[in-house]
Length: 333
Image (tube, rainbow, N blue to C red; front, side):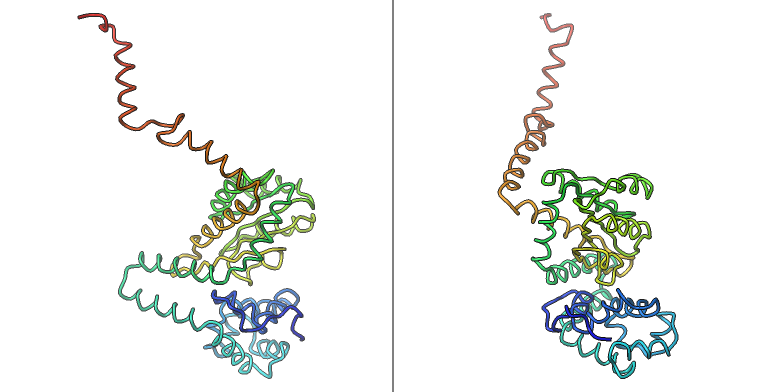
């Protein structure tokens, strides 16, 4: 099997482990298999892309068990991607990772050492900080700018997320509404039927921005496929190039979501949503002016503003005057 033409050099300056490995020549080969291979090949490629560091320490029997395939299937897979055997494939992965991921691996071991002396709460916060740092290092600004252009030109922007991702979708909708002509929150308080009802009107002039992290929901993948078939552009916010959304999307923004206890962490996704909002806000002069007008309008309704709740002293004085005015004894000496 020949590598895809768009493979890149292993020296690509990425920081997130899965995204870095996926952009290496070997990673791009696995991405190609993930999109075009047989069911068993896709299963193996998915596992290798998600667990590149762990796989380098596994024997062929252990990997076969993890992928729920036979050792013979693993051997054939290695030959199909141009390696002599499983050992050669594992060695190629280790060689790629050594150049790409040494700083990240060091950070991971540092966190693990600290975790032995700190509480699970502190460990959770350290993982969140590490996820954000790794995602920031791996972020492609041209990709972000391409997403902003796509959102700006869309007739309607649909935003979809199920489960915990529905909360992220709601926050993203609030950020997009001032700067996009029409924004639709696909799921909201409803489920897949409500989402399908919104998407039935979707056209090739629209964008579906879909958010999904482990554990991925089948409804999310199915409706994203429906949107793509309708000709809409798909923007995905997800955790890994091995995510099922990655192959469906025209543009993908990655937010590393590793967590020591939870299935995934949403902290980096929220940071990415805020980064996208800022990128959209400053993308052109009109949006900057909209942001300024919005700040002026909202300021009047904030605490202490013209229409908002008054400060404690002002409130007390106003209430005292109201009581005094309505008192039946106000004219008595």
